[in-house]
Image 1 (cartoon, protein in one colour):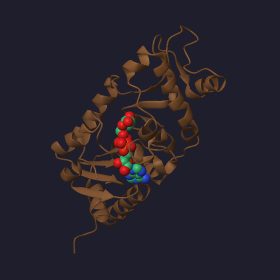
Image 2 (image 1 turned 90 degrees about the vertical axis):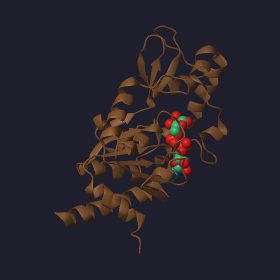
Image 3 (image 1 turned 180 degrees about the vertical axis):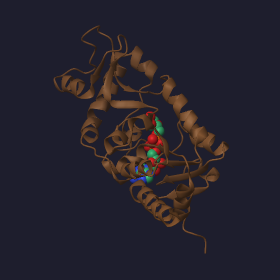
Image 4 (image 1 turned 180 degrees about the horizontal axis):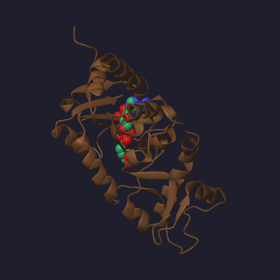
Length: 258
Ligand code: APR
Protein backbone atom coordinates (compact mmCIF):
# COMPACT_ATOMS: atom_id res chain seq x y z
CA UNK A 1 0.00 0.00 0.00
CA UNK A 2 1.85 3.22 -1.12
CA UNK A 3 2.33 5.59 1.83
CA UNK A 4 0.02 8.61 1.61
CA UNK A 5 1.76 11.59 -0.02
CA UNK A 6 1.27 13.86 3.02
CA UNK A 7 3.18 11.36 5.15
CA UNK A 8 5.82 10.97 2.40
CA UNK A 9 6.27 14.77 2.29
CA UNK A 10 6.40 14.88 6.09
CA UNK A 11 9.16 12.27 6.16
CA UNK A 12 11.22 14.26 3.62
CA UNK A 13 10.75 17.39 5.75
CA UNK A 14 11.61 15.53 8.99
CA UNK A 15 14.82 14.18 7.42
CA UNK A 16 15.76 17.52 5.82
CA UNK A 17 18.53 19.74 7.15
CA UNK A 18 17.59 22.87 5.19
CA UNK A 19 14.16 23.55 3.68
CA UNK A 20 13.18 26.34 1.33
CA UNK A 21 9.49 27.21 0.99
CA UNK A 22 8.45 29.07 -2.17
CA UNK A 23 5.08 30.78 -1.97
CA UNK A 24 2.65 32.26 -4.46
CA UNK A 25 -0.70 34.04 -4.24
CA UNK A 26 -2.49 30.75 -3.53
CA UNK A 27 -1.05 30.83 0.00
CA UNK A 28 -2.99 34.06 0.69
CA UNK A 29 -6.38 33.29 -0.86
CA UNK A 30 -7.50 31.72 2.43
CA UNK A 31 -6.66 35.09 4.01
CA UNK A 32 -9.14 36.78 1.64
CA UNK A 33 -6.66 38.06 -0.95
CA UNK A 34 -7.58 36.92 -4.49
CA UNK A 35 -4.85 35.28 -6.54
CA UNK A 36 -4.06 36.26 -10.13
CA UNK A 37 -4.86 33.35 -12.47
CA UNK A 38 -7.66 31.39 -10.80
CA UNK A 39 -11.18 32.04 -12.18
CA UNK A 40 -12.18 35.47 -10.82
CA UNK A 41 -8.55 36.28 -10.01
CA UNK A 42 -6.96 39.70 -10.44
CA UNK A 43 -5.97 39.22 -14.12
CA UNK A 44 -9.55 38.21 -15.00
CA UNK A 45 -10.64 41.70 -13.80
CA UNK A 46 -7.69 43.95 -14.63
CA UNK A 47 -5.13 44.05 -17.47
CA UNK A 48 -1.57 44.11 -16.04
CA UNK A 49 0.05 47.56 -16.46
CA UNK A 50 3.63 47.10 -17.72
CA UNK A 51 6.32 49.16 -16.01
CA UNK A 52 7.12 50.97 -19.27
CA UNK A 53 3.43 51.90 -19.67
CA UNK A 54 3.32 53.16 -16.08
CA UNK A 55 6.26 55.47 -16.79
CA UNK A 56 5.02 56.63 -20.20
CA UNK A 57 1.33 57.26 -19.66
CA UNK A 58 -0.78 59.15 -17.12
CA UNK A 59 -3.77 57.02 -18.15
CA UNK A 60 -1.80 53.83 -17.36
CA UNK A 61 -0.82 55.22 -13.95
CA UNK A 62 -4.50 56.00 -13.19
CA UNK A 63 -5.53 52.44 -14.23
CA UNK A 64 -2.75 50.96 -12.11
CA UNK A 65 -3.68 52.98 -9.02
CA UNK A 66 -7.38 52.14 -9.50
CA UNK A 67 -6.49 48.41 -9.39
CA UNK A 68 -4.42 48.96 -6.21
CA UNK A 69 -7.14 51.11 -4.62
CA UNK A 70 -9.93 48.59 -5.34
CA UNK A 71 -7.85 45.68 -4.00
CA UNK A 72 -6.77 47.55 -0.87
CA UNK A 73 -9.72 46.65 1.46
CA UNK A 74 -9.06 42.88 1.01
CA UNK A 75 -5.34 43.49 1.44
CA UNK A 76 -5.46 45.68 4.56
CA UNK A 77 -7.84 43.43 6.53
CA UNK A 78 -6.02 40.17 5.64
CA UNK A 79 -4.51 38.05 8.39
CA UNK A 80 -2.04 35.15 8.16
CA UNK A 81 -3.79 31.79 7.69
CA UNK A 82 -2.81 28.23 8.72
CA UNK A 83 -0.45 27.93 5.75
CA UNK A 84 1.56 30.99 6.86
CA UNK A 85 1.62 29.71 10.44
CA UNK A 86 2.90 26.31 9.26
CA UNK A 87 5.97 28.08 7.85
CA UNK A 88 6.61 29.61 11.28
CA UNK A 89 6.57 26.04 12.65
CA UNK A 90 9.12 24.91 10.06
CA UNK A 91 11.36 27.77 11.22
CA UNK A 92 10.85 26.76 14.87
CA UNK A 93 11.92 23.20 13.90
CA UNK A 94 15.25 24.77 12.90
CA UNK A 95 14.86 23.64 9.30
CA UNK A 96 14.01 26.86 7.42
CA UNK A 97 16.77 28.12 5.12
CA UNK A 98 14.42 30.72 3.64
CA UNK A 99 11.01 31.66 2.27
CA UNK A 100 11.12 32.79 -1.36
CA UNK A 101 7.83 34.59 -1.83
CA UNK A 102 6.23 36.12 -4.91
CA UNK A 103 3.62 37.65 -2.62
CA UNK A 104 3.53 41.36 -1.83
CA UNK A 105 1.08 41.15 1.10
CA UNK A 106 3.65 40.91 3.91
CA UNK A 107 1.73 38.05 5.54
CA UNK A 108 4.88 35.98 6.16
CA UNK A 109 6.17 38.87 8.31
CA UNK A 110 2.78 39.20 10.02
CA UNK A 111 2.75 35.43 10.76
CA UNK A 112 6.05 35.75 12.63
CA UNK A 113 8.79 34.31 10.41
CA UNK A 114 12.15 36.03 10.86
CA UNK A 115 12.43 38.95 8.40
CA UNK A 116 15.94 37.88 7.37
CA UNK A 117 14.52 34.56 6.16
CA UNK A 118 11.80 36.17 3.99
CA UNK A 119 12.88 36.93 0.41
CA UNK A 120 10.27 39.16 -1.28
CA UNK A 121 11.05 38.66 -4.98
CA UNK A 122 8.21 40.96 -6.11
CA UNK A 123 8.50 43.55 -3.34
CA UNK A 124 5.95 44.62 -0.78
CA UNK A 125 2.64 46.43 -1.26
CA UNK A 126 2.68 48.05 2.19
CA UNK A 127 5.19 50.69 1.06
CA UNK A 128 5.16 53.22 -1.79
CA UNK A 129 8.29 54.65 -3.43
CA UNK A 130 8.92 57.79 -5.50
CA UNK A 131 10.50 56.60 -8.77
CA UNK A 132 12.50 59.86 -9.02
CA UNK A 133 13.84 60.70 -5.55
CA UNK A 134 13.43 57.33 -3.87
CA UNK A 135 11.35 58.69 -0.97
CA UNK A 136 9.38 55.89 0.78
CA UNK A 137 5.94 56.32 2.34
CA UNK A 138 3.25 54.00 3.74
CA UNK A 139 0.59 52.75 1.32
CA UNK A 140 -2.09 53.94 3.77
CA UNK A 141 -1.02 57.57 3.22
CA UNK A 142 -1.34 57.27 -0.56
CA UNK A 143 -4.71 55.47 -0.30
CA UNK A 144 -5.96 58.43 1.76
CA UNK A 145 -4.87 60.82 -1.03
CA UNK A 146 -6.80 58.69 -3.57
CA UNK A 147 -9.79 58.72 -1.19
CA UNK A 148 -9.51 62.54 -1.36
CA UNK A 149 -9.73 62.44 -5.16
CA UNK A 150 -6.20 62.05 -6.55
CA UNK A 151 -6.06 59.46 -9.38
CA UNK A 152 -2.29 58.91 -9.73
CA UNK A 153 -0.54 60.50 -6.71
CA UNK A 154 2.85 62.10 -7.28
CA UNK A 155 5.70 62.82 -4.85
CA UNK A 156 5.09 65.97 -2.79
CA UNK A 157 8.87 66.47 -2.52
CA UNK A 158 9.91 66.26 -6.17
CA UNK A 159 6.79 65.66 -8.28
CA UNK A 160 8.01 62.18 -9.30
CA UNK A 161 5.67 59.25 -9.96
CA UNK A 162 4.64 57.30 -6.84
CA UNK A 163 4.43 53.51 -7.21
CA UNK A 164 4.01 50.71 -4.66
CA UNK A 165 7.38 49.12 -3.80
CA UNK A 166 6.42 46.06 -5.90
CA UNK A 167 7.83 44.66 -9.15
CA UNK A 168 5.64 45.10 -12.25
CA UNK A 169 5.98 43.16 -15.48
CA UNK A 170 8.92 44.71 -17.36
CA UNK A 171 10.48 46.11 -14.18
CA UNK A 172 13.94 44.93 -13.05
CA UNK A 173 13.96 42.22 -10.39
CA UNK A 174 15.61 43.15 -7.06
CA UNK A 175 19.26 42.02 -7.31
CA UNK A 176 19.85 41.25 -3.62
CA UNK A 177 16.67 39.17 -3.32
CA UNK A 178 17.44 37.28 -6.55
CA UNK A 179 20.93 36.42 -5.27
CA UNK A 180 19.59 35.30 -1.85
CA UNK A 181 16.88 33.20 -3.52
CA UNK A 182 19.37 31.58 -5.88
CA UNK A 183 21.73 30.80 -3.00
CA UNK A 184 19.12 29.11 -0.82
CA UNK A 185 17.47 27.27 -3.72
CA UNK A 186 20.88 25.79 -4.60
CA UNK A 187 21.70 24.91 -0.99
CA UNK A 188 18.47 23.36 0.27
CA UNK A 189 17.74 19.63 0.45
CA UNK A 190 13.97 20.10 0.25
CA UNK A 191 12.10 22.74 -1.78
CA UNK A 192 8.38 23.13 -1.11
CA UNK A 193 6.47 25.30 -3.63
CA UNK A 194 3.02 26.28 -2.37
CA UNK A 195 0.14 28.16 -3.99
CA UNK A 196 1.84 29.14 -7.21
CA UNK A 197 0.92 28.47 -10.84
CA UNK A 198 4.71 28.45 -11.49
CA UNK A 199 4.31 30.26 -14.84
CA UNK A 200 6.10 33.57 -14.13
CA UNK A 201 9.86 33.80 -14.68
CA UNK A 202 12.39 34.23 -13.22
CA UNK A 203 10.62 33.14 -10.00
CA UNK A 204 9.47 29.82 -11.50
CA UNK A 205 13.11 28.85 -12.16
CA UNK A 206 13.93 28.45 -8.46
CA UNK A 207 12.17 25.09 -8.01
CA UNK A 208 14.11 23.84 -11.05
CA UNK A 209 17.42 25.12 -9.64
CA UNK A 210 16.71 23.34 -6.35
CA UNK A 211 15.79 20.08 -8.09
CA UNK A 212 18.88 20.31 -10.31
CA UNK A 213 21.01 20.71 -7.17
CA UNK A 214 19.65 17.52 -5.66
CA UNK A 215 16.79 18.85 -3.51
CA UNK A 216 13.53 16.94 -3.15
CA UNK A 217 10.78 19.01 -4.80
CA UNK A 218 7.32 19.06 -3.23
CA UNK A 219 4.47 20.96 -4.94
CA UNK A 220 1.34 21.93 -3.00
CA UNK A 221 -1.30 23.62 -5.16
CA UNK A 222 -5.05 23.56 -5.88
CA UNK A 223 -4.39 22.91 -9.56
CA UNK A 224 -1.72 21.27 -11.71
CA UNK A 225 1.43 23.25 -12.60
CA UNK A 226 3.98 22.89 -15.41
CA UNK A 227 6.50 21.56 -12.87
CA UNK A 228 4.30 18.70 -11.58
CA UNK A 229 6.14 16.19 -13.84
CA UNK A 230 9.54 16.90 -12.20
CA UNK A 231 8.29 16.97 -8.59
CA UNK A 232 9.06 14.21 -6.10
CA UNK A 233 5.63 14.70 -4.52
CA UNK A 234 2.58 16.61 -5.81
CA UNK A 235 -0.21 17.45 -3.38
CA UNK A 236 -3.31 19.00 -4.99
CA UNK A 237 -5.48 20.78 -2.45
CA UNK A 238 -5.69 23.77 -0.13
CA UNK A 239 -2.43 25.15 1.27
CA UNK A 240 -4.14 25.95 4.58
CA UNK A 241 -4.99 22.25 5.03
CA UNK A 242 -2.07 20.40 3.43
CA UNK A 243 0.90 22.42 4.72
CA UNK A 244 -0.13 22.18 8.41
CA UNK A 245 -0.73 18.43 7.96
CA UNK A 246 2.74 17.94 6.45
CA UNK A 247 4.36 19.93 9.28
CA UNK A 248 2.35 18.12 11.98
CA UNK A 249 3.38 14.72 10.63
CA UNK A 250 7.00 15.86 10.26
CA UNK A 251 7.08 16.95 13.91
CA UNK A 252 5.58 13.61 14.97
CA UNK A 253 8.18 11.62 13.05
CA UNK A 254 10.98 13.90 14.31
CA UNK A 255 9.83 13.31 17.90
CA UNK A 256 9.75 9.54 17.27
CA UNK A 257 13.39 9.76 16.17
CA UNK A 258 14.48 11.57 19.37
N1 APR B 1 -4.36 26.48 -1.75
C1 APR B 1 -3.51 26.02 -2.70
N2 APR B 1 -3.40 26.56 -3.93
C2 APR B 1 -4.21 27.60 -4.21
C3 APR B 1 -5.14 28.13 -3.29
C4 APR B 1 -5.19 27.52 -2.01
N3 APR B 1 -6.04 27.95 -1.06
N4 APR B 1 -5.79 29.17 -3.89
C5 APR B 1 -5.29 29.26 -5.14
N5 APR B 1 -4.36 28.33 -5.33
C6 APR B 1 -3.53 28.10 -6.51
C7 APR B 1 -4.21 28.35 -7.84
O1 APR B 1 -4.77 27.15 -8.33
C8 APR B 1 -3.05 28.83 -8.71
O2 APR B 1 -2.46 27.75 -9.43
O3 APR B 1 -2.50 29.05 -6.42
C9 APR B 1 -2.02 29.37 -7.72
C10 APR B 1 -1.86 30.87 -7.79
O4 APR B 1 -1.31 31.14 -9.06
P1 APR B 1 -1.26 32.67 -9.57
O5 APR B 1 -2.58 33.30 -9.37
O6 APR B 1 -0.67 32.62 -10.95
O7 APR B 1 -0.27 33.37 -8.55
P2 APR B 1 1.32 33.31 -8.53
O8 APR B 1 1.80 31.98 -8.98
O9 APR B 1 1.74 33.79 -7.21
O10 APR B 1 1.70 34.41 -9.64
C11 APR B 1 3.05 34.74 -9.77
O11 APR B 1 2.44 36.53 -11.27
O12 APR B 1 1.08 38.29 -11.83
C12 APR B 1 2.27 37.96 -11.25
O13 APR B 1 3.44 39.27 -9.72
C13 APR B 1 2.35 38.40 -9.82
O14 APR B 1 3.58 37.34 -8.02
C14 APR B 1 2.62 37.12 -9.05
C15 APR B 1 3.17 36.19 -10.10
